[in-house]
Structure formats: C-alpha cells, structure tokens
Image 1 (cartoon, helix red, strand yellow):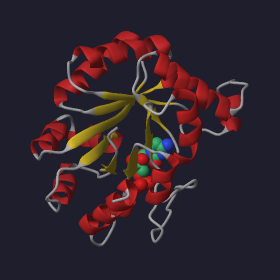
Image 2 (spheres, helix red, strand yellow; image 1 turned 180 degrees about the vertical axis):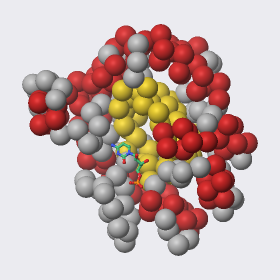
Image 3 (cartoon, helix red, strand yellow; image 1 turned 30 degrees about the horizontal axis):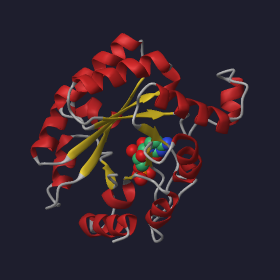
Image 4 (cartoon, helix red, strand yellow; image 1 turned 90 degrees about the horizontal axis):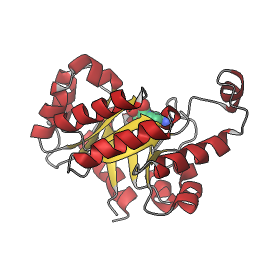
Length: 231
Ligand code: C5P
C-alpha cells in the first residue's frame, strides 16, 4: 500500500505557495486546506498540479448528500487526488460521495474526519448532546465511513493501531500532529515523530510547519520522508 509524507501548504495565498514549491525538484504530495483554497480559489489546484504534485484537498465537506456529491465532482474535476468529508454527515452522505468519486474513474482517496481533535468529550456531551465516550464515537464514525465505501480516515497516529485492528490494514489512515524530534510542537498536543508514526502503521503523515517554517524546507522534508518510510 502507498505511504507518503503530505506537506500542509498552510499559506495565505498563491504567491507564497508557488514560491515555496519552487524550492523542490521532486514531485510532492501536498495538502491544500481552507485558508489557501478560499483565498486563491480552485485555480491554485491547477497550478500545483501543473508542477506534477499530487493534492489532498482538505475542505471537510459536510452538507446534504446531493451537495456533497457535487463538491466531490467539482474537486475531482479540478484535479484533487485525495479529499475529505465529515463522517458526522451520516452514511448516506458518505455513500453518495464515494459513489461520485468512483464514477470519475480516477483513483481518488476519499477519507473521513471522525471527531475533530479540537472536540473534547465535554464538548461532545454538552454541546452536541452525544452522550458517549469520544473514543467510541471515533471508532463508530470510522466504521460508518468504511460501510459507506470510503478509503479511510484522518486521525492521530496514536489511534492508528486501534483503527487498523477494527477496520483492517487496508483502511487508510492519514495522520497530522507530527513533529520531528528537534522541532517545536507549536499548538499540537498529542504529537508523534515520523519514525513513531511509521511504527504505529500510519499510511500518510501530514506535516506543515516543521517543513514550511524550516530554515531549509527541502532538507527537512527529505529527512522526515526518509524517517517515515524507513529507508
Ligand atoms: O503545521 P502542522 O504540522 O501542525 O500542520 C498540520 C496540518 O494538519 C494543518 O493543516 C492542520 O489543519 C491539519 N490537521 C491537524 N489536526 C487534525 C486535522 C488536521 O493538525 N486533527
């Protein structure tokens, strides 16, 4: 199964993004999130694709099934290779999204966000009135995603062994919250190193600031990738 490092391009606009990418000679897997997408528009996807990179479009769709189906169709048309949606939208919404991705004939990786890492059990119980342990809902949402035909989930690397055990090794795990030993944790709390993520069984790690803010981003990226792939 494919494994790779995905660089989170959390830049405010197109100029900074393209300048950053120009430093690299290799083809990359990059993540375009809401900040960049909503400032630069879908054109940014085309421009990144022209450079030969692959794209994880992190827009976390959550709407009625028909609208999410349309969002998947448009994102595939722009050239996204991986995209995500909220499992909280329900099985029917995920099924329609998966069906649309399949219909494209391309190998689209469609993954679900279970509970956001910013959601605590307290928030879930008090704000959302979900009276269950957080861990249980994460696994339940992941099961729903699999049932609906999705490829995997976004989760902490620390949750990977539990998810793989329940849902099988083929169920893809995409894990942010990665910090190389030497770098600053920033606002990330439950962090693991690229090597630990490999040992825990992550398929893709998402790394932002440790690479984008590094003095030498290319060197840092290559080191992280080597550590993650165990080469
Ligand atoms: O800079 P850093 O490596 O912390 O960036 C991680 C990326 O992964 C950011 O784009 C962040 O939005 C995203 N992410 C996360 N935690 C989640 C889901 C997504 O850090 N649970």
